[in-house]
Image (cartoon, rainbow, N blue to C red; front, side, top):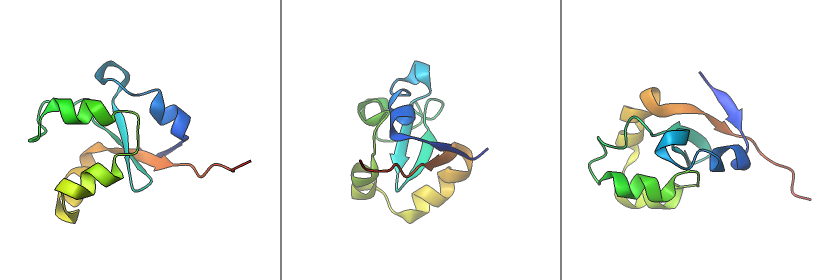
Length: 84
């Protein structure tokens, strides 16, 4: 499944109960089922739920982590929104 999401739609999924979506480099990942497996702890993922976590992700991970988990966790991409 690969849908397009607006930043507002991602922001609505900011808790585990709502799916816990995060954005990494314009891709949207659903983290609710991974939160307890995250080696850095659930608290970190919950803090960035519904937001762009690219900066935080790349600070602690490399591309191999993304390649390993993207097939399982990626649910779509971020829509480009017109800036008015």
